Length: 548
Image (tube, helix red, strand yellow):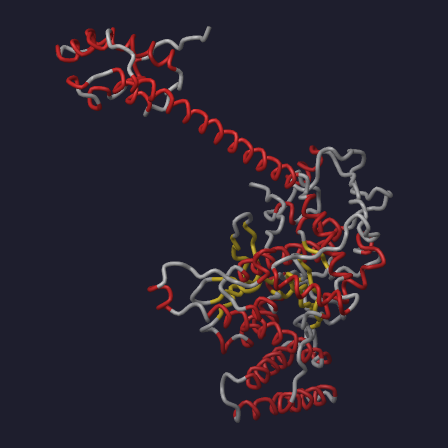
């Protein structure tokens, strides 16, 4: 026997406004109840509730019409309309239960996906290994390359066999510190949270891994280096790691082959100065090598007088002039009289050397991009990070590059800055690929940044290539002069910086094609990009920042 739900007055809230006493019937009451959120779909429960409601009408109203209508309904016979009503209700009940099952399945899928994310996104790691194998073997012969091109046209993706592939090895298991020790490490971090401490996060590894030691280790007992940890945190295959057994631990003998294939697809070589620029720079270097610093300064001034303002040649002359002038006024800006480096802060290095040079290089394109110095905030859907230098596109307020500065080239600081810079530039790359850009712009979409430490610098970048793999790219390294005898170092540094500028302008121009004001006014829908990389975009995995 079914259990009858007790009558509750709130089940009939608003009945006087919705019903008419002249037309009050059992069917109209059931139709009224059917619209309520607590309708039970049970004839027994609903009829019992209506009976109790009709008995209470004389107590809650004084209008005789309602009282007479309630008495009449008590003796109303079962009709065909009532039978049809409950048949329809039963059909709706079945449909509702079916939808609830579907919602439950979707919920389970979401929980399953969340579980994989908490485990360090192991599903993506398996896919990445298959894709890496595809990168290594897709161009092994001409016929295979042709098959790959035909698959791209048809929208299909060919992957090498996972089971038969000797390159794909089981994912190494990690041993890491207990949750309490990780929390203690987080609490001692700076504002950047776990970006400043290379530690395991609950969102990266599964708790089913054994907890034995305070250091991360591979299954074979080898310590996991900072860059290996960074691979798991950022989902970026870091091609910048050259130290002994770095990425080789993951990829084995195929590591060099993988690097070569990726670098062959990218243009990361800065152009050498040519023409009058090369001639004048060489003259300045020869004068400085002969200790004719004042003559070099005068030569630069004479050349600048004859050059049109804002040209690349005029910018380079101006940079050489301010650097020479700085050292002539104070030869010990960066080096003490005893030959030791001055103990300068990060900001002092930026203000004395890095910022003046970059400001001059970008001085002719301030209407297109702007440089935002001084640890400004970068915001994404999943993370907020403080960036030393952000290059932002005017008009669309889209970021084009992130760069990091440090006062010293310590290994720990260099690793942390490289890790953060790669991940935040991956966010920039993702946002660029979500714009309505051409296929050619999507193919040449690498996002470059500059990593500075004192007077050292290096070009780094992130690119999405070969069916969904992100690669951290290592460009040319360079040095700024620390004294007059090192002026020849400035040439290569400027060649790299101008390459960096050209890449940024290329992206700004690609974005400007879709930024005409009439398009925004007369087209309410934002056009969707059509390039193939759109389907492979993945967000980087940021470790949580410690709340202060």
